[in-house]
Image 1 (cartoon, helix red, strand yellow):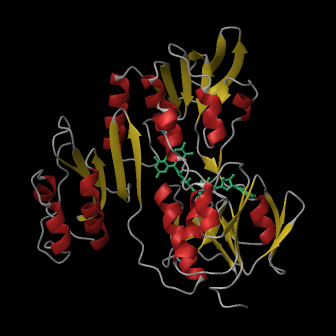
Image 2 (spheres, protein in one colour):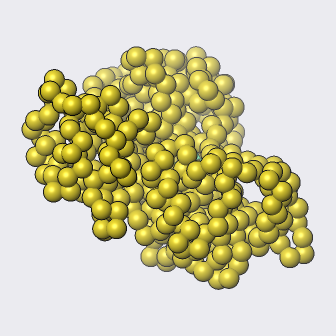
Image 3 (cartoon, helix red, strand yellow):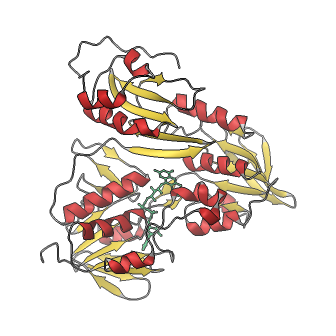
Length: 425
Ligand SMILES: Cc1cc2nc3c(=O)[nH]c(=O)nc-3n(C[C@H](O)[C@H](O)[C@H](O)COP(=O)(O)OP(=O)(O)OC[C@H]3O[C@@H](n4cnc5c(N)ncnc54)[C@H](O)[C@@H]3O)c2cc1C
């Protein structure tokens, strides 16, 4: 095996994690060949704008991670429009859909995930949409007409961002979801309520606790019949019901999978020597054996950096609390830490332009959600990472100098603090 700084690296998946891994390798001084293989024809791009600015202001929105020139400048060989079809881990080769193969010393799997399909809806033709790729966004945009009726299936992050953008574009929007609250998978109840009410004020109609039982195409549009008997009609239907990992390629490599995703350790190493992985394709099992699946922009970038460092034999910083954001109804909402916290405390007035929530578990600060208050997030993350116990009246104080508190860690876990009651929200 060559010196890792000289070793040929193949990266499969030219998305957020794949592009970030290639750039990080070069930044760290890797000088060997790097080949970045992507099934899509586009240069690597950011997906978050697809449900937001790219729908609202397509002409002003830049989605490319880097221009083509950058990849040639840093000598990354981009192979776009080509799919990896098989990995022979023993001989360290990858077969591609154009009948060529690549040899590697190290392989980074960054093949992401795909939008989960609902065949019942897909069967209804071209007025039904999903949103994962730039191509999906372009097709959707071409059908967005002021006054049209849209039914959004799925009240998760993507469904809600879509609802927000469509209302802004002048469509009428109904959102359906089997869960009893919006963003139930990744937001605490208090934030679900806030989002629900903000969307309702903008005219969105929700049908929660009910699922699509049947669907058909009519001359006047698409008709969905829900499990509670309610029938909805739309000119177009867009569904966002989660993402799934396409495991066909992974199985050829013989890497261990867990709950349908590719298992990696904290160093982004898979079970097969020489194969690392990053981004939406992974489920990370930490040192305590706890699996964490994160499908976020930040995780894709962070794991890409870790994978690049591990490949080169370098250590990485300890993990930070997970973080993601969403933009809806004119609000920028950022989430950090464990959203399953048991108590939530509000800091600031919800009628003011910015406020936040703290999540606590057994008195320790384990989560934070900021609303239009992103500048507090860095310090909030620090507090979460330190596992500090802070009295609830201090956390609730809008005048609190969070930066100072996070830096000093004045309230540590040993401090004599009363049990923290949940402040009214
Ligand atoms: C509409 C939308 C909005 C989002 N908004 C937010 C947000 O606001 N905040 C946030 O934190 N996150 C957001 N995300 C999530 C974030 O974009 C993803 O977590 C991130 O893109 C994951 O990066 P990745 O590189 O793992 O996967 P991807 O970006 O999906 O890249 C994987 C690439 O691999 C390619 N590929 C797959 N199989 C093969 C193969 N066999 N051979 C070659 N290439 C292959 C795919 O075509 C794809 O281009 C959003 C996602 C979407 C879809």
